[in-house]
Image 1 (cartoon, rainbow, N blue to C red):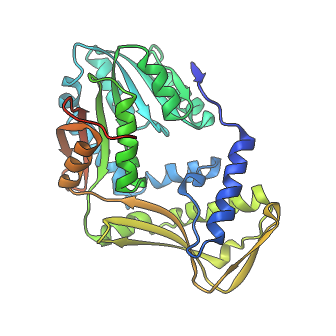
Image 2: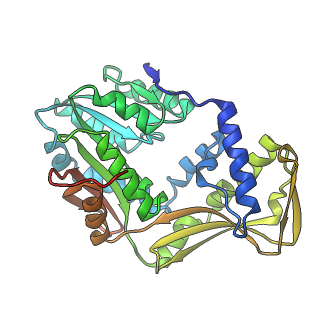
Length: 333
């Protein structure tokens, strides 16, 4: 098992940043906590369980796309020596569809999953190597900037994966900023596969983000449990309710935790008390939805061109294949 630590998270820095996020976010008129803090060990496990739910169509739709169009995807790198680089790799389940097919058809590649979480990468690398023992595999731990700058020193072609509509956690403005940065750190011959969740009936979206089994509720409430444990807070989880709602004018699914009563919450490590009115929300997450026109526009404004869009049979989800647009004139990043 090969795991390279490019940039290890300093626990003291992470804790300081989290504390500052809580201080600012819970003191603002519209309370908020960044979704990046969902993913402690329990939160990561709960999210993995969410992706297996029938209500959470995103995973099954993207899996269908990869299985249906695997030959066309493979043709884009056939005959080339390349690295299969996965950003925010998670558990890598869907990526194994590609790995299995590429190996069966004799493609010459190395798998490089990237994540900021060392534990996640260790688990993924161990799982993949148990199934593909002779696969050349290097798990990289660090932020995207530091890792991609390292990869760029080698002129070998990269096939980048950014699956699961992870791009949807950014606003459109921030997604373009991120993608322009990604373009600046990659090579003209590189290929990109990005997952985009399409706009659809709010009924389907609501089920996906407020599932009938209550696992998404547990996932969201675990954020408060984490704050209790790490900062000696006294959030009573029974006094908060998970709520998700689609905003069609923004094409955005938004999630909140609602205080079900007027109450004060003490966070001892911050030496602060935060007051909540009855049904006051804490905003926790945005999940952007897209049209095909949105995808084309975002690609163009980020310096890419769309080579191909692959849809699932319900037209719920798109895996979009991009490459650098050589005529793009970048603005300052």
